Structure formats: structure tokens, C-alpha cells
Image (cartoon, helix red, strand yellow):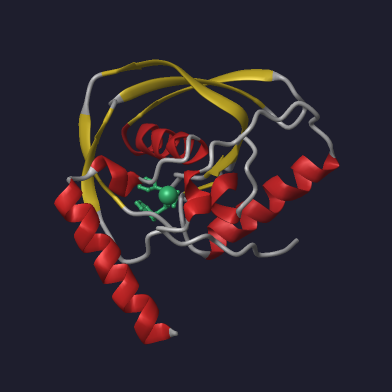
Length: 167
Ligand code: K2U
Ligand code: ZN
């Protein structure tokens, strides 16, 4: 297993739209395993393949308290969403930045598991937020893009300053 480098906003590769996975082979299983290890180590509760510069529709999530309920979703798509919730979000690609984002309260997501079987997961609360956050990544969207233009300018300036300091 190996830890994968995570792209940092505003890297333009984070804006790429991921492509569907047609062949569920060992390379996808290895990628999922490495993404999960990277997520747990970060630590985070989700990670999209886009964030590790692999532009395929694969996400991993573990939003459990016990950190032992890993979800691996291939070609995830939201098939139903309703309600609304405002949740403080962060992102492993935007370190140190947290802000509230409005998301659907309840979602139904259809996906394939690593054996290619079609599954459906129903979620509310934090798991619903995480599913929407990760599926956003596969569409080339980072959570800060849901914030005002002024906040986005300030975030980019703050991250650029951080990058100069740590360079
Ligand atoms: O995509 C990512 O960068 C992983 C995020 C997923 C996430 C963000 C906001 C709300 C739910 C999920 C990371 O896990 S950011 C760290 C984190 C951990 C727990 C709760 C919120 C944020
Ligand atoms: Zn993120």
C-alpha cells in the first residue's frame, strides 16, 4: 500500500471532470486501497480520485466514529436529493480553510462496488454532506466554489501566502 500526494487548491487539475470506470480490474482495487490509506492517514472522512490526480470516478469515505466502516464507490451518482442543511466543511485539498456550505439533507447515491455490483446508499447528515462533497470533486468542483467570490479571492490569497512561506 502507499500514500498518495494530494493536489492543493487552486491546482487546475482539481477542475478536471473524472471519467467513468468501465473495467473494474486490479488497478482500480489497488487505487481504492491506496486512497483509503491516504484518507485515514490525512486524516479525513472522504477522498476523491481527482484529489490524487487520477481522473476516474472513484471515491472512498469513512464517516464512522469508529473509523472502520469504509465505503468504496465506483461511478457514484446522486439519484435523489432533498431537504437542506448548512454544514461546516473543510477539504484535504484546501488545508486550513473551513466554511459553511448548504447541501441537501438527504441523498440516494447509486454506485458500483469493487465487484461491479450495483449498490444504493441512502444518507443524511455528515455522510450525505461527504457524499456530495466527494462527488463534487469528480465534477471538478472544490467546496470553496460554493462560497462568495470575495471569500474565494481571500482564500486564494491566503493559500498563496502560505505557499510562499513554506517554499
Ligand atoms: O474531500 C476531502 O477533502 C475530504 C473531506 C471530506 C469532507 C469535508 C467536509 C465535510 C465532510 C466531509 C475531509 O474529510 S476534510 C476533514 C474533515 C473531517 C471531518 C469533518 C469535516 C472535515
Ligand atoms: Zn475535498
